[in-house]
Length: 164
Image (cartoon, rainbow, N blue to C red; front, side, top):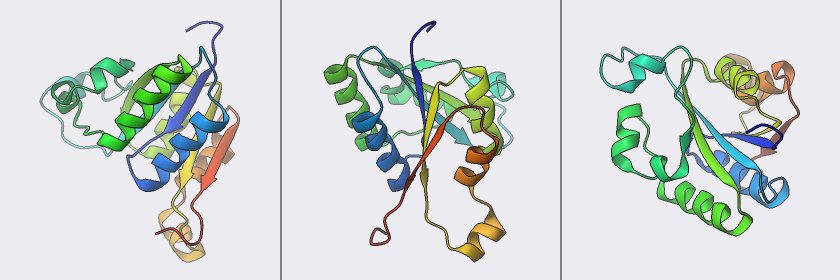
């Protein structure tokens, strides 16, 4: 991946991460780029499969053809939704980009910042759930943490007020 742009998009397959993914494809991605989807699963007691091998460093970079396969993704404890797969498959064909998935286990804030440095990511796009001030203070905001601690440019795609 040397010399190519590596655009990261943090995904949890929610509506706000799908919005961020669409925004990245429409506004940032260009021919020849690598689109790296970064998924973070909660920590757990993973005794089976590849998850145990990659719990510290994250999974290897998984190409689109592999993460489109439900059997492969079952090994990692991830189930990408059909809409996300359709969006990235269409973008890969139309924009001639390489789509990869990297899975981490642990705290989303810390692992996304680690991904920026370890992959490395040229820029990152992340969705925002639109938590109110109180919930954000109690739960913490992943996007706010990444903006303040990430080592690359970070774009936050906000959830519109009228969206659920």
